[in-house]
Length: 487
Image (tube, rainbow, N blue to C red; front, side):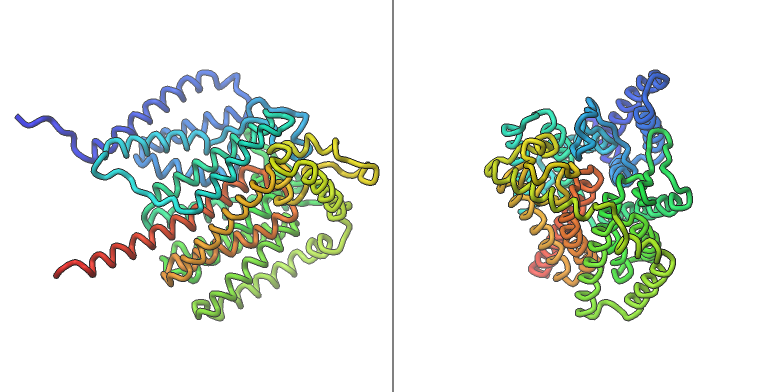
């Protein structure tokens, strides 16, 4: 009598259902404690309950978890355990960041392990993580090593904990996303998130003040600078600038109407929203990335005259609608914000010269900066230096800075190689992401960018360039193999 074997589909679904049962038990215990939970914990429990219900209905736990991770970027469904109130006001991360992304990653990695274990040794996953992972891992290595030099090791551990989660997310996307449809789905969810966040920012303009719902805060800062649910206005500006050009690329990519419509709506609402953030760095990043994308696409003949004309009309309408905001932000009084950055840069260079090898420890700049203030810098506005490169250099040393820049450079190169493939869908997307990263690198000269949302969307963008390149290389190899097969 042959041994009993489960149907393949049932066998594949067993790990998912075991996880659903486990999550359900955990949620049940959490639900009994809902009355004593703080607002953000309550929000996470409610979200988990809804998630478990949807999993039972839909059945695709992996896709739903990825969706939650992508929506977690604009909506910041997180808490900080062990939160310290003495440091964050100066620009440091103040606790152990635990978010929807954290929980989803645990489940996704368990599923990934079970799937590989079940298929071993015949169909074990073979993913090309590529050279981009090397500088990223080296960068994280310098961040971990900087703990040795940190004045406050716990503060250094806070940021390393967040960065480690983003590294795991990068590896997961590159290691498991292997088809065109999966990449398209990720892009679609990112653009839907852009639409929702753009709508929130526009609505906040009418409301005129910060609102809080179930522990989630939608920010309106001084001078009607709007940050929405992403964070501060500069953080929101970085978020929008990283996604606007990829959304625009849908208009020239060979895709279905749903992607073109979603891309167009996301671009329109996002363009309005980035104006309302009043983030000058975000404006620079958006303009620079748009010019790169349009000029290169135009040179290949992929861009019709209609898209530049539409962008010109949109820019003109935005200038007419928000001319007071633009003029005030560009030429009005900014309370000395721009002038305050230069003394902070001088302070950063002083810290770098005094700590030339390992830096002062990641997330420790805000803690040690008082020790380096001289007489001519006394009385200045104190905050983490508003320059990501100087901040990385001061906190992790020259090795950390070089690894960070190399990682971004490799990601831009990956996107450029996608563009050179001339694939009708992936080529414009790869170019758009590379252009967005270049624009964001310009923006990094003007802010700290330690916020989880910005780290997450940047590293996902970099992961997508490598994922797309891997898919193109796999398809190319398969085509070559088919041509060499005997008839």
